[in-house]
Length: 548
Ligand code: NAD
Image (cartoon, rainbow, N blue to C red; front, side, top):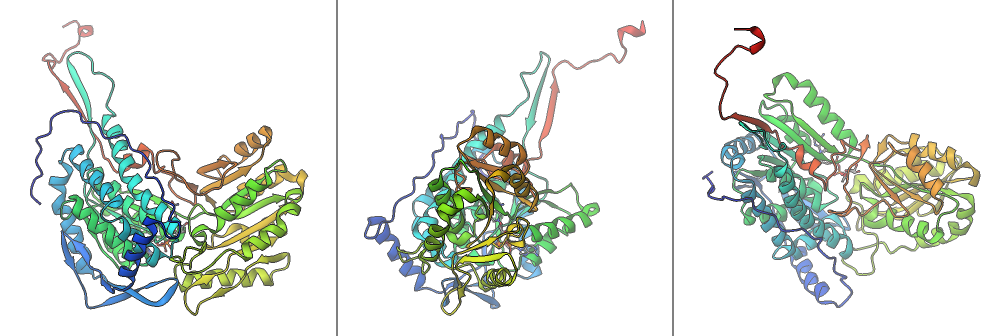
């Protein structure tokens, strides 16, 4: 890789970031009409995706089809399978790019990603939206907030990078100077990304590269179409060849080979808890072989609760249950999937919940009327249908709405509410990652015991919503649920964290809680060197107390 010019002198300030405003996409609006043309274009193509290694596009004759979840007979493209030689080539390309990239001034790196943000909201906006809608089955609104979030990540992280690099020791004392050289990790890092957010897919490798690292990125095979667009816009923005290398195909194959390498320096993973634990164990088993201790960052599953106190605003609880559970088919890590409702409120909302959930529009997300698209693949549909069937067959469980699925055209799972008498039931514990809400109705006097159930029932600690108008009840819930969620919402739904406002991450089985949206998330990718320079070094080794 050629050296980028290092001629910048001066402490440059990054532009103040602002959140990209979401457009409405009302039927017939300019933005909807333009996007519809792009949807038709993408839908009419069969794209051949390639690995991107050292700036070269590597195709394969051995491929897997990409289909649309809501129309699984519709092939949108093909991804290449990955070979060990591809993985080795990606690692070699990353390591070759490291010397120049890690010594590129931080502002030059930041500028590349700020340009990428402009490409996200400019030239590539409609293509990102169309590939996200067709490939991941997102509605106009869900795709728009996802793509906007990618621009937000890039812009806010640029600003956080300035904060990171400004972090220096206090003013040095006379005769010496002290400073921190915030360099990237020694070796290469790996980004393994999930299917559910185009924004997360782009953010993980971008954050690592922004902080001076060289990356092997393995996007989800279930969102390859939009990840391919993200990679192309990174290249167009000026990310040098070899800095981010994208490999499609098996996550297990890429990860197993990459983490066996002596120069493996870190992993940024977002996905399921089981996979993350498996990778962590493999890294631990290889610990003697590494040059450095690898940094392991993981954001994983959730079993997010909405807990209502008898004083809660009934309409606010109802709206949070619908929006928090069913948007994007419940396939947000932060989606509500268990609710604890007091009897007095349940009698007011039970029928309304049954009717509304049963009539939520399910279908093709490119149809404006759709609220719920298809789940990502057949395995997801089977997992949810199995849970509905098990709940139906388990005493003390009632299917209030839904409980069915349809797989002829797409992987459609009907929005479902399961009411359980058992606050520790499997439906209150396990992540099913789909349009399914488990409800436990508690007696109004049992608030404190209910909070203990919220805290103790699931292994996860990602998001949680508390609804109440009683300050004492809110305070008690905040105390009891302190470790139960990395993100706690009071009188709001548990989804929709926004860059620059909420800092996202969860603890326990939900992740290493490194708070995307804060400088902490960038900090994990630097390996700082401390430098002390003395201007008039000591020249006498003795001390006065020695009397010499
Ligand atoms: P997943 O774990 O199936 O896949 C995630 C990535 O890991 C993909 O790129 C996949 O190819 C790869 N992978 C799969 N098996 C692997 C293995 N054995 N070794 C190495 N890599 C492997 O998850 P998903 O279905 O893409 O995403 C859904 C999950 O992600 C849910 O559990 C959700 O809660 C979680 N998620 C969490 C957050 C968060 O911020 N906490 C955000 C988004 C998604």
